Every structure is written in C-alpha cells, then in structure tokens.
Amino acid sequence: MDIILLGPPGAGKGTQAQRLVEHHGMRQLSTGDMLRAAVKAGTPVGIKAKAIMDAGELVSDEIVSELIDAELTAMGKETGAIFDGYPRTEGQAEMLDGLLAKHGRSLDHVIELEVNEDALVERITGRFSCANCGAGYHDTFKQPKVEGVCDECGSTEFKRRPDDTEETVRHRMQVYRSETAPILPGYEKRGIVTRVDGMGAIDEVTGAIDAILA
Image 1 (cartoon, rainbow, N blue to C red):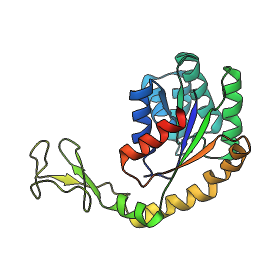
Image 2 (cartoon, rainbow, N blue to C red):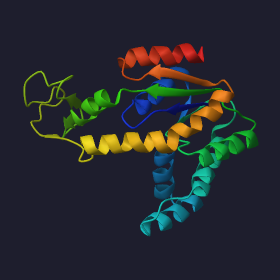
Image 3 (cartoon, one colour):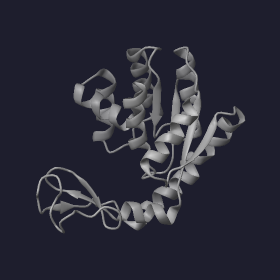
Image 4 (cartoon, one colour):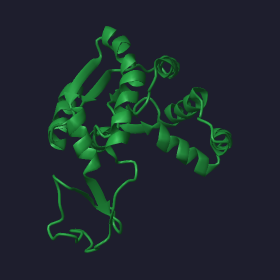
C-alpha cells in the first residue's frame, strides 16, 4: 500500500508516519531525509545534489525523482511507501505518478491532516526541548513536572527552534495553501483523498488513519 501524508508543517505528519512504520512495516520516504543520506553516503545523486546545495540553489524535481526512484528499487514491491512532505507541487505529483507506474505501483490513499491555523500557531510557538537529551515540552500542554528541570535527564538547559515563530508558521501555512493544496483536486477525482482532524490527540489521529488503511 502506498500513501501520501499531506498537511502543513506542524500538522504531525512525521509523528504519524513513524507510527505507520512501526505498526504496518511501511517505509517513510521523506525527501529531506533521503537527500541528506545521499549526500552523506556520497552516492552519484548525492554528489550532484551537494554541488547544487553548496551553490546555494534548490535541488531540482529531477534529482528528487532520482532519489525516490532509487529508494523504490531498493525497498521492493512488498513494502508500502509513505510519502511525507512530497509531492509539494502539481509537477511533483505528476512525476510521482510516473515513478510509481514504472515500479508497478499506484497510490492507494492521500491523507490530509487538517489543522486550525490559530491552534497550530499555539502548538508550534509553545514548544521547547531539553538542550541535553532532546525531550519535548510545551508552554501550555506539557511543562516539566519540576519547573525548569527536565523530566528525563534532570538538565536545566532548554532550547527553542529559532523558526518556531508566529510569523514563520503563518508563512508556512500560506505556502502550503498556495503550492501544495492545489494538488488535492486531482487526487479527489480519483476518490483517494481522506481528511483527518490533525488537531486531535496523537492516538486519535493514529486511530483515524488506521481506519482508513484497514
């Protein structure tokens, strides 16, 4: 089974993809992770991508396509794929269809995690983590049991991601609406789109996705 997980940054795609990996034995194909791995491994496509990134330019759809092609070849047909954060544009959606067809595969589901923008801003801007062990916390939803002390390792040093600001989150939402959301109508015509409330508890979202895949 091959699926796409869609939703703006912070909607919880990564968390749900990891649960699908654990519960269903699927493979999460995050283009960012694949790109970093290819560059680190020094593969032919990784070397090509590194030169482009070192020049301060964006990696082309063709290079991303090469990465996905290689991954699909390596994993075999018996393993389902989760496309996390890809495709982002209509051009990439067409490219993905071609790649899947080449490997004798096709999309079974496109699952969009829907979010409330104001609630998402609160969710993202309030998060922070232990600078030592990485344990995650939140200003509103999950404070350390002892103020200023990490529950996991006892460290008193915490950090926030510099891009977890309201301005950045709202800009990401706008980019998602303008660039990625337009790919949905094409999938809707095929009858493979299902929307899930991404603002629910993590277990509730997982349950909703499991029900779609059942």
